[in-house]
Length: 144
Image (tube, helix red, strand yellow):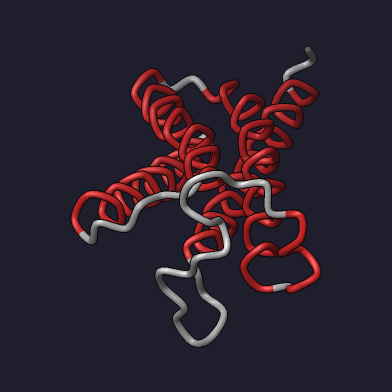
């Protein structure tokens, strides 16, 4: 289905922007990533590679894996954002080295780096669900 291919291209774009954005903040702006940032990178970087390969090979079943990765990314980003924005969670800060409560950016009073990671993961999650539903619908209509 063409819509699946387009959705996978959206995932590639989002994952690449998130990957390049994280590298921009650490390598160009010299913001030292905290422990939670590293975990979120470990989740996002493979999604960029997997989705790119999926677009090239026109293999949409990778959406199942992207769904799992983005789900974990959503949980990690929510926890990290809560550490930054909710004082109740500051006692749960288990980060070593750079504090996970540091807000290098705080646009409009709520957009931080974990918030951007959350949005990226949500977009990937939603696109993956739609792709999976389309794949299942295609199997049913094809008699499989």
